[in-house]
Image (cartoon, rainbow, N blue to C red; front, side, top):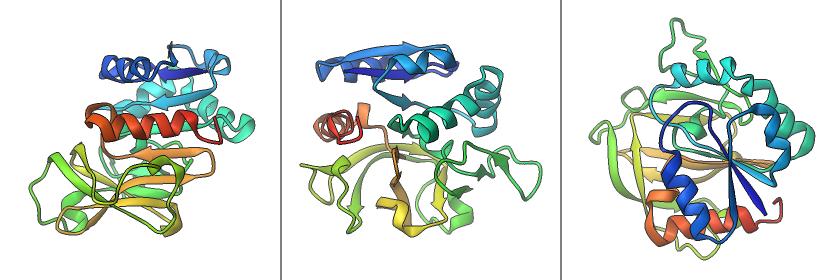
Length: 212
């Protein structure tokens, strides 16, 4: 089993690689879009600013390549934190108009600022927070009790166009999307690699899932 961790020029790769290694599978640092073919599944990290990350993805030829891998070859993909937001159609972070900055479009929806959504908690949302799983009960949360705490760091949140794509929410004064799935694409707003045993269990579930 080879788990590709996509290196498109953002940080936070070390903790993801170490987490995958701890699960006794082989992490592969993928720094060229054409090398994704050599993996069994992919993890898309993300930190910083949505628009900046999109420019890095475009500059490295990742945008269409990722769509091809997921839609054409059914390569399982897990987006983490901003990596989950990049799965959306568009984000208002860094947007110059109401259309937003285009994302990968793998999970229909938009990314909005927490305050715009009505969040009454502190922004940015940083720290441990419990998640409420939806009735879908996806294998991503196998062995993880409802209400388990995960580690979050974000000021924007993903609002899927289809509520059926939401796997879990977290309470920020309002319910905020914590995890999504559409087909072979998953995303977590929290950092599983920084979320202790529960986070490692989630990564294990993704890697061992029926799609990988």
